[in-house]
Image 1 (cartoon, rainbow, N blue to C red):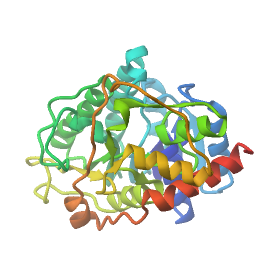
Image 2: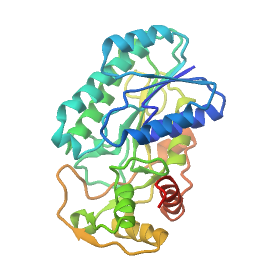
Image 3: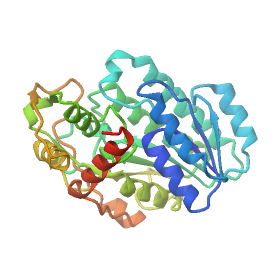
Image 4: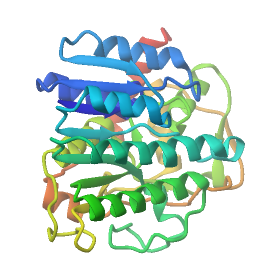
Length: 329
């Protein structure tokens, strides 16, 4: 049995579906918060509830009593895939406490769950490329120092890595953190740029282009990301393995495409998929944002066999087709 947190989220939904298709039993939780359209989260859950090997319970990972009860009820679980979190850099300026609750208290509760599951073989959890913060060396490597977060979101994600390191050291919990690089695809998050660009263009509204378009992102197709998550799940570390931190069975990997794309070219691909041109409103860099992300995936390829296959020129038209179908455009 696999416990999966954040099942109604974008990456959680796709990961759960892939695991279910492979025959795994998935016990899922999510708090269904209203950070973005709850109906989209419910629609994802409807897809998952078609599977007999799927169960779901609405739980906030920051709720200590509920998490203890859920842990006791699922003592046979062998893996945790922890993807629940309060996402979004800009939202952290408006609601910082939600990041402390979900990403810090919630992550601690998941670590306590891992500590008390007698059959647990591996904890896999979501980190973020945001932890690289103000680093200027490119591409971002898992061996880089990550002590300069430029947003509260990034600081909480780096904190999750440090909390996990302590638990892996103290309780010998095999753990793997995955630093996601701008994951996109069908059923995606409406707060992400590719989603909001598509929505605004189809509605005839201008799109906001930060830093006057002088930005690059390492866009990662959702299926490539999920393949990396499941490969990580099936590859637990042991003390002393390559890339482990000290004597703890804990390591982190980058999950990116290893190919940063110019923002203006990215917008052009969306425009071509929609067959129209966007009105662009160019603004300064947003607080907490970074100019470029670029994943070094050498370690991920070496240990996990990770190999991203889908470029934005293939992925964006697939997302646009889903968007037009889902929203009846």
